[in-house]
Image 1 (cartoon, one colour):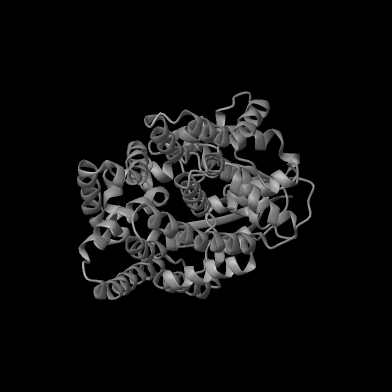
Image 2: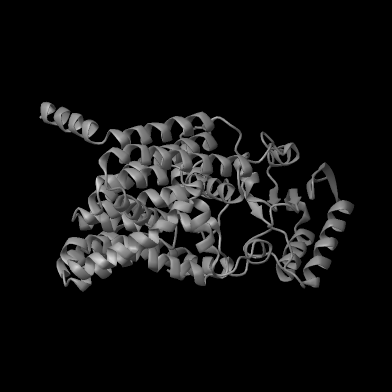
Length: 477
């Protein structure tokens, strides 16, 4: 048995040398950049806060009911084990990134060819978006890994396991069932009822407990998805400050790597192949559907963020590589072509990383860490969830779910009526949480009233600025 495993590994190493070079490059470069400073973004603060909330049974962190729960649970395990939760999350993201590249290669070689898989891996390993998100604790990397792993088992005919992984992907990011629908549609079209049942049963295994919990705690088993859809279509930061037109994803696909233009040629070859011999090309139906359905879904959303592209980008890259590999006829040109593609992809991803890497904002870092080590029995309210990363107190959310005139009035009334219960209030105008919607004069007016009340009745312990951003910490004196 051991000899068979050794033979299998030696055969794999011998037959996939180019891919292993790509995987090694992806590992080394990510490891080198791992120790650089990476800002803790808004959503990362939410997921860490939720993880603390889960494993402290509500006595620490914060809770947002419209978020998926899988990534917070993973981060919460690290926190509960006593690890540095940021370091733990980054290690997990690092490992999942490398694992995603490996699974992606297996899928592409299975559906297309090893030539296409090598080219695709060079593009995917250093996709600008995939590479950059690998240094931040967002749900995109875990979701991509789960979708790819589910796709691998689906292609291998392991339908229950595939369904379970699709279900876990849903618990990591709510739009992930789009890929489950693609897989199920293929099985139903082929009238493979038993396989469809296994796929659905697998999907239901992790999802049903989540839905039951929603019904128990919220009285509506679909509430997180409904609330999430509402907020994503109304939040000011995404729909006003960073509004993008419906065709924005087509720009992002080419921005990620201009070689993705060859996906059109790859899709053309797919259709031409299906017309000539559908049996030979039918496996490509799945990755094709995994482009069309998610793209249609995300295009109709008001919030069009580059992060959403990352979930279905691997399947676009598969067709891009298929198109490119089909044009490389002579074997002697293949390795140099892959090397050039790797260099191009690496230069694009590194340039994007350098352009978007944030310098240390010392005012913000001090603000977020201000309550670290502070002991208090009173309530803490914050306008940014990142505060929950650096303290194990329970955090009240001023920004949640949508900050507008009504919510601004609600917080002010709570503050006045419960002043003796409030120990600290942390406010900033940078993260977007307490940003009034355009034209909401009631919100602006009420926000100014809240500031005046805090200045008159609380002690201002911290007041620093960075660019347009102001960071304030008030203590009840």
